[in-house]
Length: 135
Image (cartoon, rainbow, N blue to C red; front, side, top):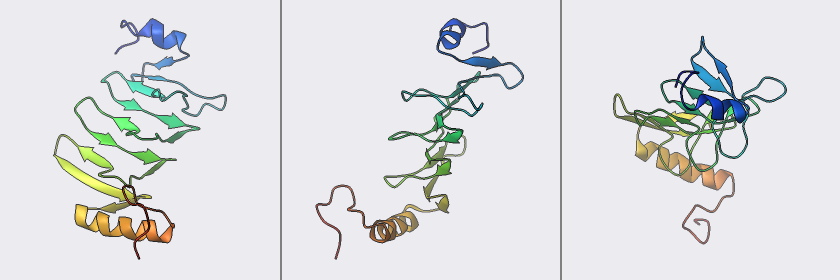
């Protein structure tokens, strides 16, 4: 997606600035931090990678904050890798998946599920799909 591509005019009209050395389009706030409203990526790489950010921190509700065209993805909340409903990171090149809760990595789904139950209890959260907390 070089600056001269078909998207350049639309990106520029939407407030994007092209950075040729980094080979990407960026949208920033008045402080120069990556920031874009409306569930639109705040940075788009020439290779197609997309990053969602608010006030300089990778974050996105209900979807990965980083998506690579090869299928890799990473979920972030306020700049920290985090997801309670499944794997937070998937690396297509290796097929590796990882689970994270507030930045702490879990190598297996079983470890993650045990930690998630404790997280729900510690934060007084009713798990999705349940009508009450476990006794």
